[in-house]
Length: 281
Image (spheres, rainbow, N blue to C red):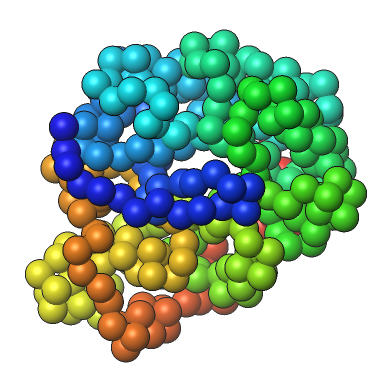
């Protein structure tokens, strides 16, 4: 087992979350189980999944095959877009538990707000009830804009513990992160390295990596951490998994942070998936 220690962050509900997690998108079947077992061996203690990934069973199997006790592993899943009504959202939590063979999820999120359906408050109420009954320990959002989360707060009095958003050097989401900070919400970064790997080729980031004798991926992940965000990278090879988690033994300077921040683009979203109108089905 790896002895890398990942710092813990305290959330607004009193629970804690590791400062870096492991993404499981497209990790399915026996190969996916093996990849996740290797990630747990490397020191990851947060596995991020979703109902729609169709791999909750693989996540549960990886946990059972791992040498890490269940209580030391934090697991996330998410309500899919077509199941936002109260009953469907609540059943999604139960179904996720059956699929994974788990007694509880540490985190359960609403995957997208799907605003044209206008049911995300119902989904949130279902998650509040699932938490009350002990099916989940912390609840939050994914891809929600401030106005969506403010409505949840106004109508239920419950503040999300986390919000998972697209965040990478070309799309730094400054205003969104500031809103999270003001409300004590943890920012999680999906696709933190960018799925097309273009940020990995940036000469300015390569220069920073050389200065620290680190990889470009390590520099970008460290940038997330110093922004106050929690990255959840995915890697299939054990060597890349170990590389991505080994980011807590160095620090970027303020100038280096500014250099990476300067790569931000107005059209930085990878796809046309703006939460104001994007619908997940």
